[in-house]
Length: 111
Image 1 (cartoon, one colour):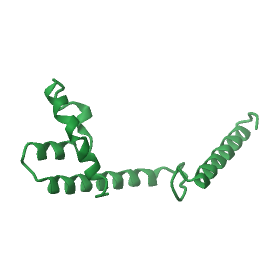
Image 2 (cartoon, rainbow, N blue to C red):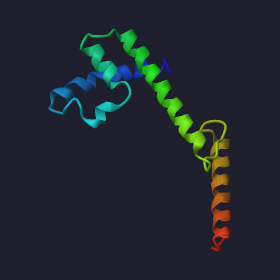
Image 3 (spheres, helix red, strand yellow):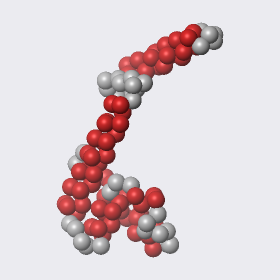
Image 4 (cartoon, helix red, strand yellow):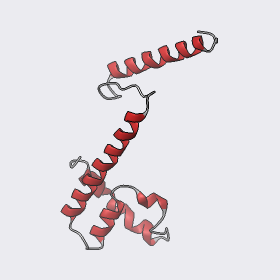
């Protein structure tokens, strides 16, 4: 997680002009993780290291909330690996194909 944060900081050069160009600072697009932390750094209220640490912590908290939510979803099927792995993609396609066939069969539709 900490390795991603410096990449986010590289985008900071784009952020201040957008604020200056009349987009309100409380606009919904500025609610994303990292914006308020980087804004505080640009305003000089926190160091870059502190902002980076806060972004990483916020990202971990968000990921934890997502996992909590997904665990409650009974229809979610988990695949071990990443979506760009051809074996995982094939397994997902096979799973979805099997689901649509069984759904069609149970609804009386064509298989």
